[in-house]
Amino acid sequence: MKNLILLIALVVPGIALAQSAASDKAVAVACECYKGLEKKKLNEEEKKAASMDCLTKSMLSNIGDLAKEYGYENLELNEETGRKIGEKFGLKLVQKCPAAVPYMMMLSEGQAQTVTVGSGAAYESTGETSGTFVRVESSGEIVKIILKTDDGDETFRWIRPFPGAEKLEQQGKALAGKKVSVEWGEYQQYVHAMKGYAKYREITAFKISG
Image (tube, rainbow, N blue to C red; front, side):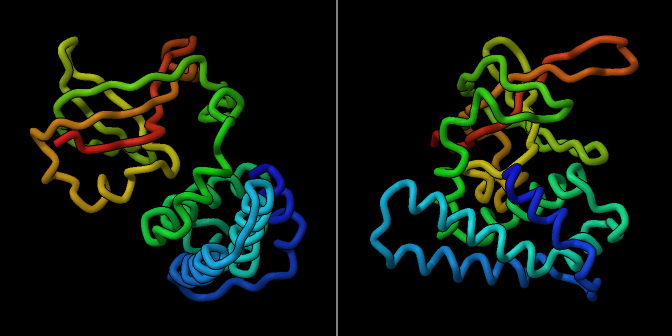
């Protein structure tokens, strides 16, 4: 993903902004690319390289329009805003293109302990929690889900694409009261009001138990 951000930063200046729904266009382009990969006999390393190529080309060819759709101007595009655009686009890609899911998962394999989130802190631990789905909450850009477990209500942050995100997006309120399980990565983030760090758990996978 770092290479993607650097590529975006290099090509942004010459791309004109357009109208809207750029993400739909970019997702369609990426999805066709991923569907094409399914027909090829590739080893794991070739699949990773081809997957990144599908992702970068679809974004780079629409980066100006994506920036506008997500609320940024060309002059605001830098490594941080590129990362945010990439996260939003990646989430929509996973939701709208099932063919992309195994390749996106492959790209993220082995990165659980090194991937940076929030303030830049890596996961300190990972785990899985099962319980009863309560609700989805949204506060500004922060989206989280609440589960009721034997130890009380637990909160998990929805930050980036993960296996099961599409079901969560589609079913939403209908999941209330159902048994689900969440795989998570725990990290620390600085909270100004506390003048210190707080621990949060990010969703890395979601599934309905029954």
